[in-house]
Length: 240
Image (cartoon, rainbow, N blue to C red; front, side, top):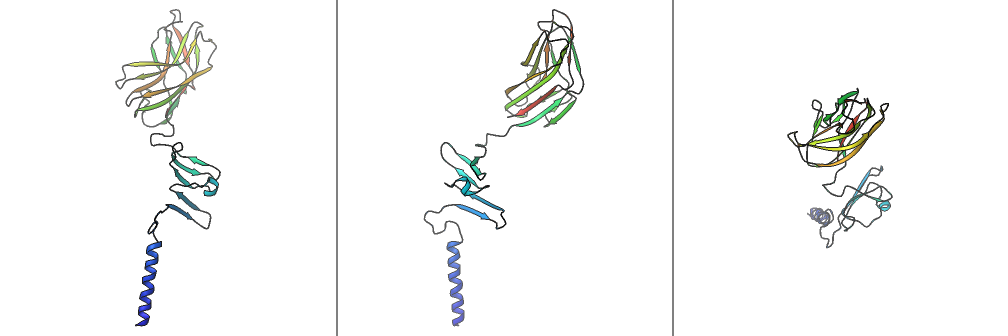
């Protein structure tokens, strides 16, 4: 009976000990949440709710939340300094959503300022919103988009005008806004130098975008000019 009593008492004391020390913050007036799990082999993870430790002291791979006014956000240690992750849910890394290039020359014959969308034979990247039949991009969601285009250009006469243009339409594809990326006047007949540029747009879902050129609304003296848009012409669309 005495042995049983001693065994029972030992279990009771042990249970009380683990009940008080086996949980974070139990019976602690001012608990500090601090998780530090390290493996003896060198693989480890350490995360702080908040800490005043320097990045070297915390060690490479450590993470913390900084709630100070000017530095609010989540940080990780690279072993030297604290590096901040993205600051909010509305901030995202830019990503290329569509890109393509021409593999053959395209000749545009005109003496008016008509719209001339280019044909891109090799679409390198497509998030599903580039239509290779219409050579157009339908905006998937509201936001900022950075668009680039360029091409080698060669006109057939010295009196000429060309404007590389990003055409933006409403969801019906009828109301057109021309955004000029590059303008060339009296471009060399022996040309074919590569020209282009980049613009940033705030667009709405379902707007339509095309890449192309406008020629001869002035500067061609009423003559029909053949403009060769060379193979290697390209476009990229980046969602910001």
